[in-house]
Amino acid sequence: MEVYHASTVVVDRPDTTHSRSFLDFGPGFYVTTILDQAQKYGARFSRRGKNAVLNIYQLADDLSKWKVIEFKRYDEAWLDFVTECRKGRIFGDYDVIIGGIANDKVFRTVDLYFAGDINKDECLRRLIFEEPNNQICIRSQQVLDECLTFKCSHSL
Image (cartoon, rainbow, N blue to C red; front, side, top):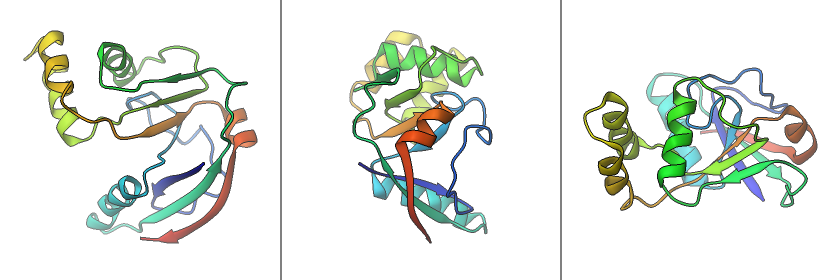
């Protein structure tokens, strides 16, 4: 499947060492199957006066050899996972995590929960109406090396 990664540079050799902590699914190399989502993320770099590059890859369709978890909706399992990862904790020993990204609207709700302004039930009640988009976090360098092939990149 074709996947996308927006950056300020061409990333023809992705790695897990340059990842930031405290992301939705913890440190790893993040891609999406949604072109528009990657382009909008890249536009954030442009608005800050930085170079914006769309990197395009081929991700193997069969990841059955790896430890993969997929969140199909914004539910309690997703919220618990994101909560731990955003606290800087490595949650689970997964090679690949697939699920919705905490976009601005979702993150506002999750942030209220993190701050203690709403409880978990209220957070989940608000999230149930949100349609998940898509992000794939590849935590394993071996998965990157064996399953992700750089195709091309271009400026946004």
